[in-house]
Image (cartoon, rainbow, N blue to C red; front, side, top):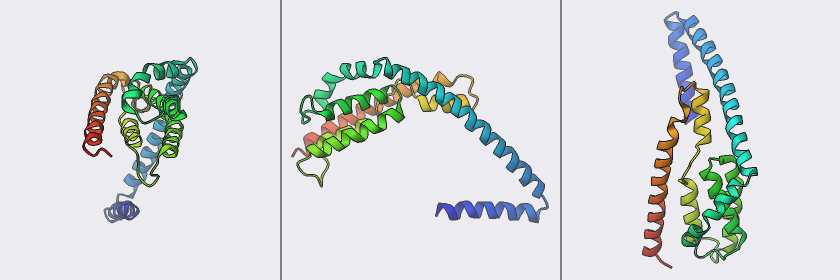
Length: 193
């Protein structure tokens, strides 16, 4: 459907330009937009490389593992059904810590590993367990201290203050996380198995 919509925009715009005798304006706009797209992509690559490199250093320095240790008591509250010391515990904590630090690319494999292990612990494989639902909710709206991708995109787009969104992002993700945990607890107690 979307392909048809885009094609109709393209053909309609070109048709109108030809009818009105303004085909040179279409060519000029096409060349300008192409140049701007390349400029934005190159700027994005540079900013992403900087932030991801910085985050990789933080990860190698043990910041992610340290954050995982800090979050361990919260883990017991959120995931009481996961056995202590299970590999799911490590993967979930590392995933949450990576999300908090804005390491989206590093968080994905850890999240997949955690969900895979939670599925192995699931006594009813055709249904999601409460731990799986909690993990999915947390992974979706996790508190973010450093929104790396957004910072990179803003810097690449020429923002004069790309880091100005750090505070609002933290507040928004904190609010979303509190709501997700509260809803999880509410629904879990309401439909207790």
